Image 1 (cartoon, rainbow, N blue to C red):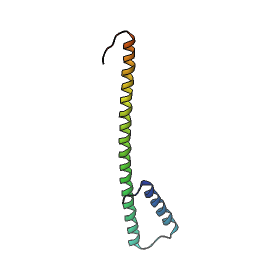
Image 2: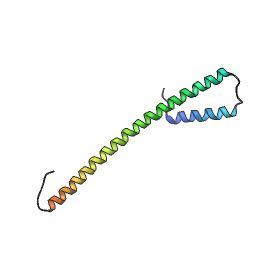
Image 3: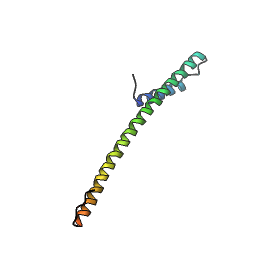
Image 4: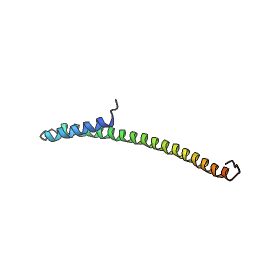
Amino acid sequence: MLKSLEDYIVDMENRSAMDHSQPPTEDVWTQLQQKENDLLLAAELGKALLEKNEELKKQHDAVIEDYSKKLEVCYVSVKGDKLFSYGRLILL
């Protein structure tokens, strides 16, 4: 099950704190397994960051599109009001 980004960060911080509190292990297998676990955790964290980045990009694009449409409506409205005030109506 995919954890939240915050959960990954907490896991990494906890693991780092545990690594510093324990004496170095001479067992190469244990060290290799720990490095593999760290690598998997980093890969999952990277994937979660990429997914969050994509989500934020989509939200950003939607906001830009929404405000662009609103700005265009305001521009057309203001331009229409100016044209109307000159005594003629021109459809844009």
